[in-house]
Amino acid sequence: MTLGTLLTGCGDKTPPGEVVTMRACRICHGADRICADIGKLDRAGWEKTVDRMIAGGASVTPEERTVVIEWLSTRKPGDKPLCP
Image (cartoon, rainbow, N blue to C red; front, side):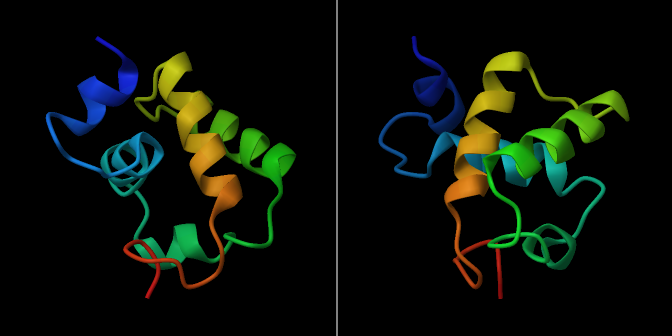
């Protein structure tokens, strides 16, 4: 089974990065906090931010880290469903 299959289940089209972000990041941060940096941080900025969160205790595996960074770095301000 691939990470995508494990994270999204059968037939669910939700991107794995979104699934992990919703699970791991929203435990401590509301969508407003996460969305504040969307469109402002590039991939390197998200790598630094996600690594800081992991060091602080975020429950994200190395494989999940990659998909979260990819997903966050490709979002645009106001992207649904995360950002209002």
